[in-house]
Length: 265
Image (cartoon, rainbow, N blue to C red):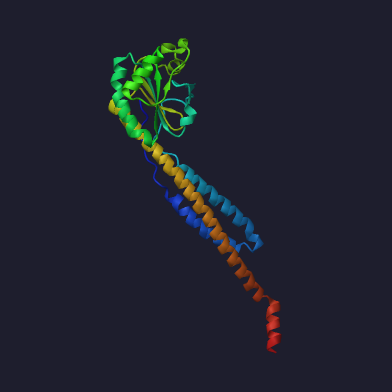
């Protein structure tokens, strides 16, 4: 079961045009700002423009066509080597929970494929976490060592919490082996119990989605920097125009005209 294919968000034209328009409008408004009657209109226009700009960027940050097959999940369990495995530590990454046991022939046959997926995608944002249903910790260690499996493993030190009594098994209802759960960067279940090409496709699509989200965040940061630069440039231009306008008004004042006439006489 997997969420629909990702539809990549395309940059919105309004999100690209608005920063440029902001600079021009800000300059014009600041040019008119020395007239008190127009200052309120200037402030209202800028607030509305900034709101539209923020909404356009926020909308572009949300990919369309994505649905989820399950809610957000919480996981904080003991690891095989005594560490704590906390799903929050992997927030921002794609996580595959793999339920397995060394005594299962099907699970043993899946290891080569999982290892290939791990080696191919680990540097792109994929994290695999194994949940073993074994009872004997030495059998788990021997199997992982022989198969060169190096992703973290959830394993309870208490014998009464191993095997089918594993709390994570009960949490995800993973009663058949092998079983897996695919969790997105926000901690939400997006697929489960996929194998072979279906698993590969699901991981590729989810990693593409993750890459797009990261690119959108970078674009938001760049857009914010551009916006601030535009505000600065607009303020400087507007200040210069305002100063020039005040000098023009001063030179055109009636007193200056009379003084000029007196000098001429």
